Image 1 (cartoon, rainbow, N blue to C red):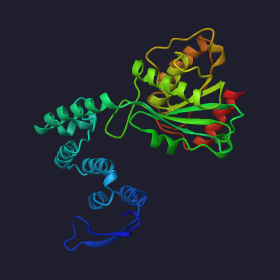
Image 2: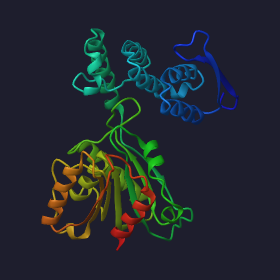
Image 3: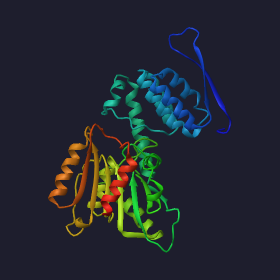
Length: 334
């Protein structure tokens, strides 16, 4: 189906009696994303809704993502009742959405009686998924990988409410770095919704699974165990710090973008001198205070660290991330 040029024709313009006919050429899902993103930037939400509905049959493997897109657009246009229908249909297909009456984003739905039953069913589906899920990983070897050479290892954790695919898109590392490191992307077992995952501090199951993955990697590939790095964004950065300092993984370096503070740090006096931590947060980052608390702990514990605060940046991935990653690796490898 993706090889067939699919042209969508639909009317746009809420207040127009006749309507204006527009054509959108959708060949791949990437085409759809670019088109709908452009429409959203222009605040053409009604057109975006129609476009998304039209491609539901074109990309059956992206049905959950398309439902989430419609959920976002319906909320933008205050079509809350439509989202109740979407969630119910999604549940019938086994999808779940992390519906929670305590979360601020769901306040508009509290007045709907049927929202209670949707929340109960959503929790049930998520619990069933958590019983079956497990942490997974993908390994990327240097282009000229040699079985006679040991390579430093870089483990990368996605942020909260993300997944391994998004992490791979975010952490695009240049060829020079990729040629030096064995890079491993990790994904948590802990579902947020059907397609996104997160990390929680002091999660013994996550600790056990990630340690098992680390052991598999060093058993199957030539890893220089004196150079083990862990990188992560937001909750992934928090977990990276926890894994290193709590000795779940024998890391020598940590790269944390906008990390929070782990609930508990068990710092080994014998190993802390061998660890370097690079943190970057935004001036407007809601985790900035947590990072400052970490910086105070690191200072008191005499742990080598560098904390960069970017002016005007919020809780987000830095725009010049490639340069930042290079700077982080340079600091850790000095």
